[in-house]
Length: 93
Image 1: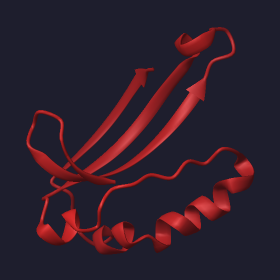
Image 2 (image 1 turned 180 degrees about the vertical axis):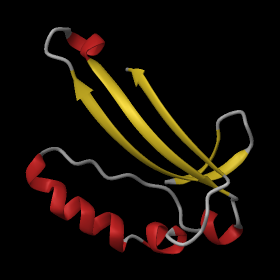
Image 3 (image 1 turned 90 degrees about the vertical axis):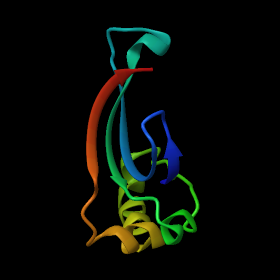
């Protein structure tokens, strides 16, 4: 999460990314990412939320990740706000 300008104007973004490792490939060629990004207007209140991320390293951490997301100030502030754009991408690392 955070306010970013990737060449298309400043937006406040909330992103969920899932990495995959393919067994039949090696090294970085085996890693891909599926990303879902919600983009919001970068209001001063949203920018003040700062930026950050959280990794989930195993299935055993899913419950604590869910609790982290649902209780985060960013999620709470944006949960009922429609985004100005949504992007879904898949790419190899």
